Length: 135
Image (cartoon, rainbow, N blue to C red; front, top):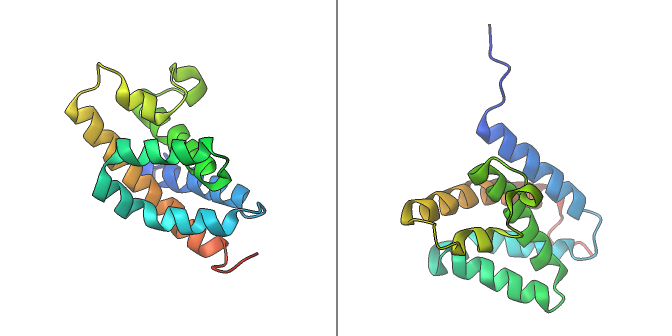
């Protein structure tokens, strides 16, 4: 008898599908698609903390795609790391969770690994659901 318990990969995929599906009808969908496609290399090049700071800076200057992506990452990764929804975790973003003085190098590595695993799903669904030159 097959187990009905959902795997972590299934949960990641489901969450990413919902988030990208929500973006499909937004005016910034093409920019979101381009941003999420570049994100893994950005994380590997500059690190997770710097990447999140970049997303927040751009979001603060009115960039909807940066804000949406930062929210998607924060909601999923903080929930996976704390076992609580973002709103219930005591943190307003993944960046603030990382910057907490009690975080260890292992915590940072785990956050980076989880973020990259989640971004892989976001990237695939963005490529599938959002046409490259959609207006």
